Amino acid sequence: MFEKSSAPGCAVVVGAGPPRGIGGALALRFARGNLPVYVVGRTQEKLDETVAAVAEAGGDARSHIMDATAPAEVTGLFDRIDGDGFVPELVAFNVGSNRFKDLLDMSPEFVEGLWRECCFSGFLVGQETLRRMQPLGKGTLIFTGASASMRGKPKFGAFASAKAGLRMFAQAMAREFGPEGIHVAHVVVDGVVDGDRVNKFGGGAGRLYRLSKGSQGSLSTEAIAENYWHLHCQDPTAWTHELDLRPWRESW
Image 1 (cartoon, rainbow, N blue to C red):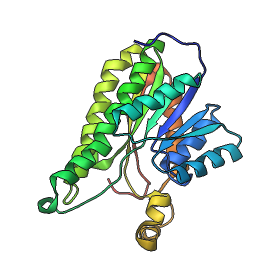
Image 2 (cartoon, helix red, strand yellow):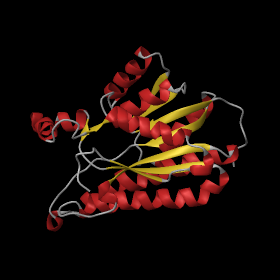
Image 3 (cartoon, rainbow, N blue to C red):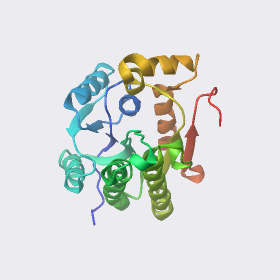
Image 4 (cartoon, rainbow, N blue to C red):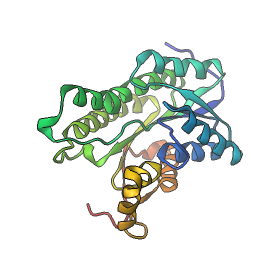
């Protein structure tokens, strides 16, 4: 059990990536809210871009390389935060990629890999976050989800089951720790996101697909980040647990 601390709060974005992406946009928004931000991911070059973007905007950010599926590395991140003299006030879990395959062609390794990346890692980050927030009796933990968590489609069974598992962990955490003052939220991102991952996919094919959606047909990363910040700032008498985000052009 961790003791109460008077240390200043910080934000943590696990799965940060480059500035033009959900994770990067979250880091920029949280920094604009006067929180030092830890940007966490697997690729130093991408993290360096986001740290530089935050600094250019007048914020404070630092990078941390981590495999979110490795328990010791997740604990190491939060131990570093403690050592730096901060406590996690706002943690956003943004790990996971959408991969598909015909069901009969899915290997056990493919299914388990997606589960570890999209679900198990969320459990690890959530558990360690809650351990640090519980003694304080406050904090915000937000998970990036997907519409796949609520409906499975052909070829997406492994991804959908993993994201559904993450959603259930988020619900269980919210019900267990909400009464202790910790706000746990799950954000369903339903639609094409106007970020690097889509725009660089398939040598430009992803960008063409996004453009085919028309004006305002894809999710703005800045708008997504604004919704996360809104969740963090909500009055505890009216917390949102699940938020569903999609462009106005996207069908239900």
